[in-house]
Image (cartoon, rainbow, N blue to C red; front, side, top):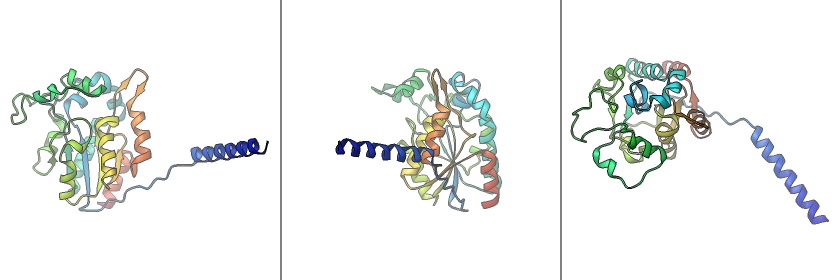
Length: 247
């Protein structure tokens, strides 16, 4: 009888602790931007994600439109240019040899199947202009300005397969303002690796978007994970105000 009572008491204490944890608000550490140590990182600002003519528009278009993602990324590019904030772009390209891989994850397989981000050759830009792999036209003046760092392409979702971390380290960057596509894939994967690598990361909530599939809302899933993992989650308005004040 004593043993049963002790077990019931322990269970009650555990349930109480779990309820308290569930109701407690998550900390909001925030990121304080520092001149010379803060950069904007944009993942996949490309036609296949952000143009109505892109191959994924049927999946991401609603989220992109509702968040005003195209406009908000543009606002980040503009303030970076005005305030001389370094910008790093992590693109996604697939070359013919990438299509010979013997296995892949669900959405990775889907991307290969629809020809997403395809380029003819790693050393040629033939057919690149205006393709799904090309930059959204309105971003070109900012990306092709001679200052923006365009890294080698990431091949699945995260920066583990490109030189983004090296480029950031070499530039003395330790604080990242992160935006781009897609919220629950490349953007979230970059956020996770940046956190593991010791960077401070602020994700811009409405300068990203994600696919909506039957029973799956990629954007909501990403925002839950970002809120739990990143240092900060802020809107574009909040981020611009902070940049103007601190940088």
